[in-house]
Image 1 (cartoon, helix red, strand yellow):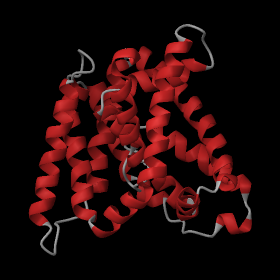
Image 2 (tube, rainbow, N blue to C red; image 1 turned 30 degrees about the vertical axis):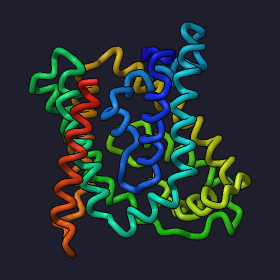
Image 3 (cartoon, rainbow, N blue to C red; image 1 turned 180 degrees about the vertical axis):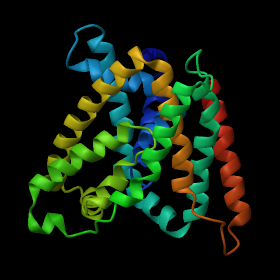
Length: 271
């Protein structure tokens, strides 16, 4: 577990990065947790928080700092990220792609048996196919959920989005977009409308805890297979994020943004 007394400011900052990622459809908060080197700790802490008393205080403090950073980033930066993504989409997406590319070496170092065996390749392929199949199930459009007062859908949207957030390569905001509640929730965040946000937040807690418990157990029992699966999810997410060749004079800045993302990710991996 991370030494929270020594690295609390860094943990809050990493939580903020994950929070920003979850604002942008297509960008995976789980992937960014891998990039930032806290995925195992995050999954383990969430999964054990309510089921075991061992290190509960340490886990709670660690998760509180991640949550604080994420919440602050979402509320403070939602308008900025909306502007940047809308007006400078290619450089923004290329930066996130760079972060993902730079994280691949650290994933390969997560376990001693990451050789291209048949089993590892099989699980890698499952991860790739899982991401590439997403467009087939994300065809829903916004339906003005909050206007209709459909709190049940908001609750299950929170569960589904949070579950997606904890799995590398899956975008929680993309799930919200697919379920037709993304823009309503973004408006609620910007307006600080707690009456709309509380219901999906409760669903989100349930989704995160449940999925984290499953992933944590799988990592402990089948580490090389799980990391091969995660690698497949992350590699395929690059293809899903790729916005094409930048136009309108943004090619150079997008390439620079890509390089910055790779460098930052490699430095974080070393850290």
